[in-house]
Image 1 (cartoon, rainbow, N blue to C red):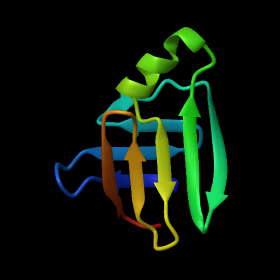
Image 2 (cartoon, rainbow, N blue to C red; image 1 turned 90 degrees about the horizontal axis):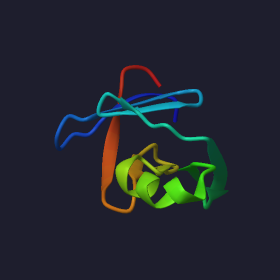
Image 3 (cartoon, rainbow, N blue to C red; image 1 turned 90 degrees about the vertical axis):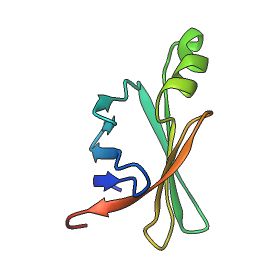
Length: 90
């Protein structure tokens, strides 16, 4: 999941570097992430500690990442979903 990814539809970049997530050149300001595995897919859910900010966070940022067993990366929130292709080496 770590690395650089590109949306083939619009060229948007997604960069995952440790705890840091960058989408469209904007840092995703999250406080925590949860990782789970379901039927071979790795699922990362991003969140914030402030309950008052949770709704706006879910609408304005990448709130989840899923990489399936075939290596397809998806990012989503409550308003969008996109599939990404890896850029460079895995």
